[in-house]
Image 1: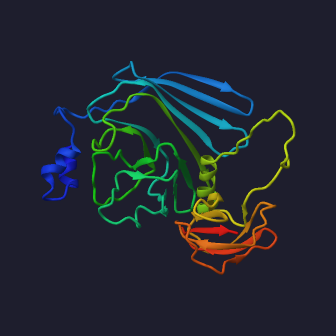
Image 2: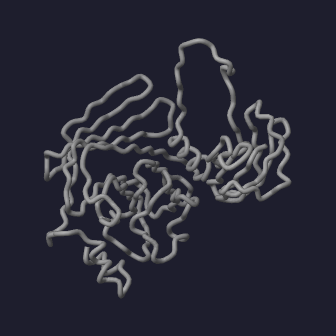
Image 3: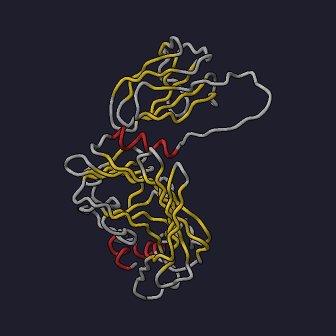
Length: 335
């Protein structure tokens, strides 16, 4: 804790910052790292999938139980991993839980799917950024000099470290070298505005898939988004309603652009339709709207719903075209 404060806290701010970064009554003891050990593994064949569930406990404190399940689905290119802990006891001292993914790839290229877009942490993060503990927007990718690699998709646990666990470390700059990824399951490093302890039963889900040639859209962004917004089905048994049995929603001519909003404009007339380019590619896009909307023009607007193009784009046969730049959010009001 003292070493972290010395590296992180700006000179002159030690008086208040060191206390904020610390915790009350922290004893001066050596850090303890506890590893999981196996109690048993249970296998299950469900027809369309097979599953192995590991029931484990901590080596040095056997009363703490957890489980990890690995599921392979028929005709699906990924493995699904679920981690869960049962009845974790609260502790006032700083602690963290990690799940380790030691992928067999040396000196890879890294791509982090973050809020603003895909980031290369080796080249696109300035010195002084947190190079020890990254936050993801769903997933990350790694690949070798031939483009072959792995995607780790962890939408419920966005904090990760590469090479080594990264809490209570501040490196200013760092050279990443391995395929070792550590996913943070919980931590109590930060006291201010964060929880002081972690307790109870909780879980987290992960997906892993491989590819032979890295492609920002096909191997990374689109599959990751599909795990965040999975296909859902609803069964209804009753009288027939007025709406058709089947219908299409908004469709786009290219992948890698997500629809972030579609519905009545809360700030005025018309419908709001928002897009976000996620793969880093400029280009034209065709939008096909659901039938029956009777929209005539699409007016570009800002995030406040204020129209910035009063001329608008024509909508013909429920279709219009627009140009979108890399990582750009674009919004329209449909009238």
